[in-house]
Image 1 (spheres, helix red, strand yellow):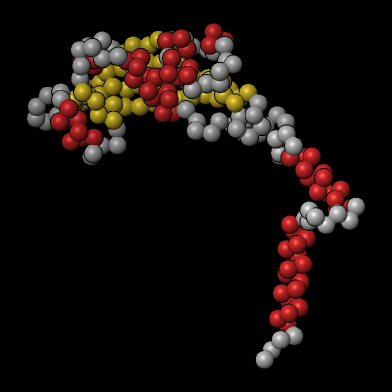
Image 2 (cartoon, rainbow, N blue to C red):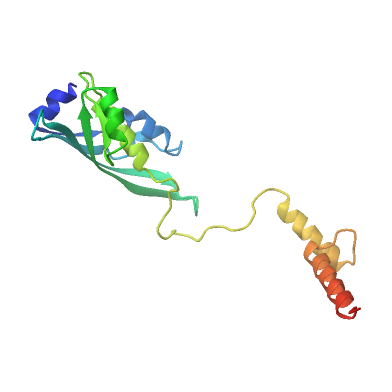
Length: 194
């Protein structure tokens, strides 16, 4: 779209985009998610002209979007669906040098006006940036498993415990060794005050 003409019209544009139209968002989701089961992303864009005392009015784009995206909870490793919201205001300018100059001074993003601007691409960028870094439930439906699940680790722990019970001293519990060292150090220094 011609983003400059769109902003100048100050008309709203709304839509719904299925996940198939947002491949980079889909790429960040768990691989077992069926894309057809995910609700479409709803979005709204509206141009706004801000009059200046001197010169052309400033061009702004107000962008909102809402998505419910499925993730894997990083605490309990169960599925979790979380909302991702966008509410951004972006200023559009005529050229790259102006954009670079203003970008350092403004909190809002500054982009260059283009006749072939991809609005859906911008929505996708914003959704990716608004997605949670560590998705998780507020309260997990079941408590997270805290045991080590690597094969052989539990067997090694069991063998260590059995070795201690049988009097096998070839594999001592490291904490027991540390306790003995602390006792020895305490006994050796307490009586030696020369």
